[in-house]
Image 1: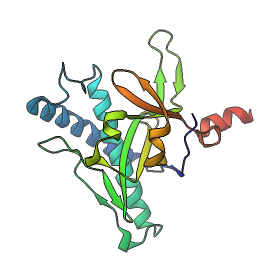
Image 2: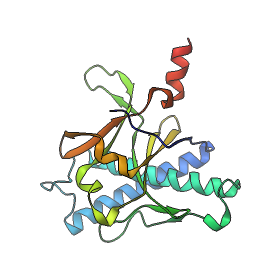
Image 3: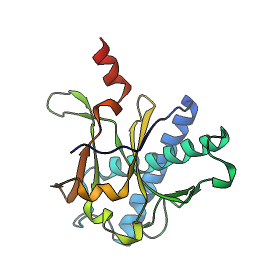
Image 4: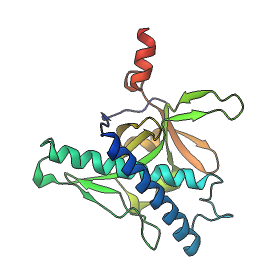
Length: 203
């Protein structure tokens, strides 16, 4: 199934901003893991636990920071009016954070992030993540009901990221799959993929 993308943003930050965001995301990820272990959520044996939890937490934190800086940048540039100045909710707390991530111009947003690339452990082949996913349980959680999902595809090595905006109401119609837990999945439309894909087609 092809996702209906409402808007795509190409993130553009100076290198020093990227370095700061990445370091901050690493710190927040370690703190999240520590707090999760203390309060009993997302630890080994629970439904939410992943073997590569540190990397997942890192990209989750990085995505929220990228989203925050991108929209604050839009305010600074006058693209978003001052009266619609974004409100960002805590990314880390002593208890699991169940609400939405941001409120911008009366629109509730939930940020999802993963690595823009994947690498085969067998061959070392590096490919692009062309699909977006939402955990079914998270999507159905009424305390997290958002108007939009903002999917951040980030490359922390090359300092690149794209943000894909998707209306929440369409996600329940995506293909449902079963992995570690059930999730909804859709493909990014070919015309909205990454610059690298377009460059390769033009060669």
